[in-house]
Image (cartoon, rainbow, N blue to C red):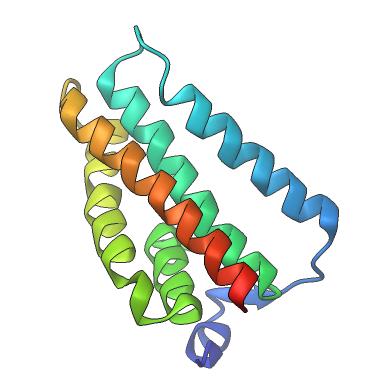
Length: 142
């Protein structure tokens, strides 16, 4: 695993990891996982919120490694790419799916209303929950 290219480009930077910073990320993830399941909210907003949980799970992986993604253009893609490098090939199916979701979330937030279906929201929520379990297992094993 080499994060050096992202470090060299300024896409990530080393940080001091604290229990508080990890706890804050976990709270954001739990909030988004709860909020994305609220019925009566548009499918678009639920989708964007579930995507936020996936993004912060990837951020959690990176933060546990002692890094953070900088706020440069393309930082969502960078977040998933760096998390994939840290987690290895077994995370590829999640990362590939979340990359598709990233593009769709961009449309939902900036271009189109009523763009995603309830089925797509449910698929994303399921994937986020699976990714969370995957990360928990990888963290315990490593």
